[in-house]
Image (cartoon, rainbow, N blue to C red; front, side):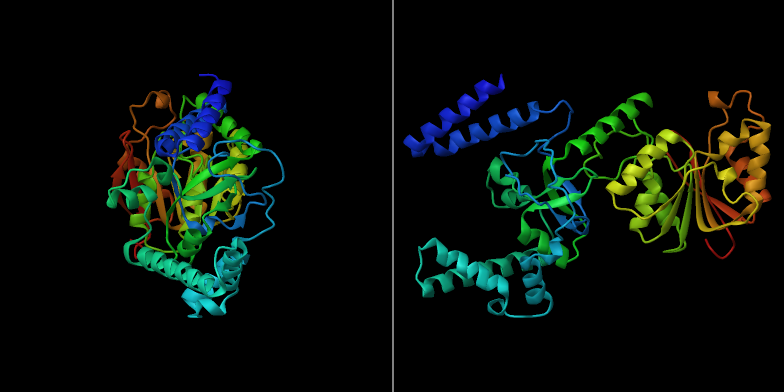
Length: 426
């Protein structure tokens, strides 16, 4: 169906609604679904513009400089400087007032937000001053109810809330907190200030959001990542952690992160990720409070690694060289080292095999997580040395300061994961 025809149908629906109000609701549903179809057809990149994504509300730090319509603009790609990081959400009057009321115990009528809301009601001209006060108090009471509801029962999607009430309304289902995505990947507040403020004040770990507008430079990065994945056999190696990129398929899921996190003996410190690729583990473990270092020599991976680090506003350090060239004549001291699917590549040639031994002798870590290859893999044909998983672990123990090891899991492709550690750090 051509966009011009869709526009004509939507306009015709508006005229019918204005002349025949009883037909309003079914025609609004029709217009809504036509809008969804039109928005989906406007972009040459395949993504679900109506998807709900879950994010930590603290990741929504700044506000968009231009507010976009949550229905008309959803799915659009709009250029401009609306994504400049100039206005923090925490500086909004509503956030300050909610914090004063819910955290510091101040009465609503002693906040600037109360006076602003009252003046907005009075400007409509429908109420006397006394009735406007009553209307304002009702609004404050409803905010209290919403705050306590979330505190008692957790943050729910509109779909969950409507389902519990037995209501079917596809328009209300889509009405979540909305953000826009700037050129570098920043999640910028667009609409839904009450719910976002409450989620922040209650330190809700994850909340549902909808994305309205994306900057064309961000879309270009997403296209590049999709093309990069195609060049890697159709999928990326690691999952991407940015909420608007999680739909790009990857070889591995979150299993390895979860199994390592479960086995960590320390809760903070420095982590070295050897062969970081696009920075998945550094992003995940930085969120857990670790200081992370990403070792990655590939120029293509480094290009995306730097952009994704900025998109997630991470602080981890990038070491853009081979691990063999890092602190070549010094001790390499970290609390945790990740060596997942990387060390076996150094067994293929005599030179890198000897460099691996030298590296292990310089490495001082409390824990090392090793994912090994399978000896029968075709890539290991003709390798200088080819070790079984258990022999590989023993080889590392022999040549490093690590003392013990244990098997902790196996990935879907059958590769085992081990924890190697100093005695006393199990």
